[in-house]
Length: 293
Image (cartoon, rainbow, N blue to C red; front, side, top):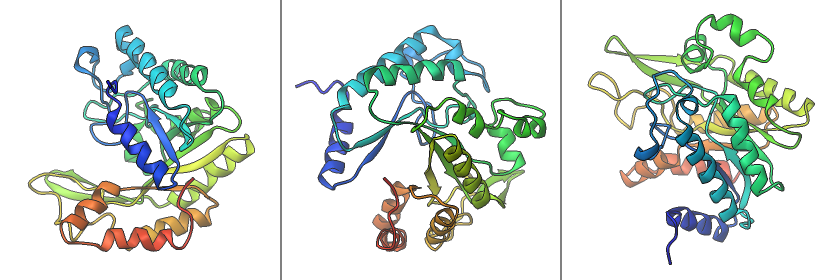
């Protein structure tokens, strides 16, 4: 029987159901994981770097809407699907070409999902405030960052909240340390207000009748690849196994009840390489408090 290209996802959802787990299913052209955008060659647009990729191609927009509708129709009967996440950080620029998805087309995508299933909540996620420099890189508004990020309605968290209905989910992607290459040397930046920001946006979401989940809590290193760059896997600069408890405890103290960890592929790769510390750290957290829906 033809699985329509959904065979791997069918298997993953079967595994989740068998383990008694619920799933936040991400739909669309922009997915978690580098290079962010996963667009078939036949629909790949000729869009300039740093632009709204959906605005560049009617064929891409039509293909994305058809894909969303068919995916929701296929899985709306699966009880393990807790919510639909429409795109991944759609209003943030990211990937090698720093593309983003504009709110106009994102609204069409949201309607396409609701037309197929009006019973589940929708989630939209955003790269949560980190530092002025990285906020500038990820902002779709470009220059004059200080004014744009502090003006009412302009921070990506506020723009995202405005597109959600009561009962929907604001997803916050929270990272504590990120390293990059600068002039051939590794530069490590820390987010000083990650806990306060996560708590502040949770409070605002609740006041507006929305939910807020941490859809990515940093649970793996974020470090550069390159000849001058990446430290050995056993000595990460940005996140180690002992940091997992710190970030989960901090987010829980800020009021978050649903905290999803980002890094499962890294944990398993390290375990395969003979380093069980990451998997052990996750297991110790799971025994202490719920990590997600």
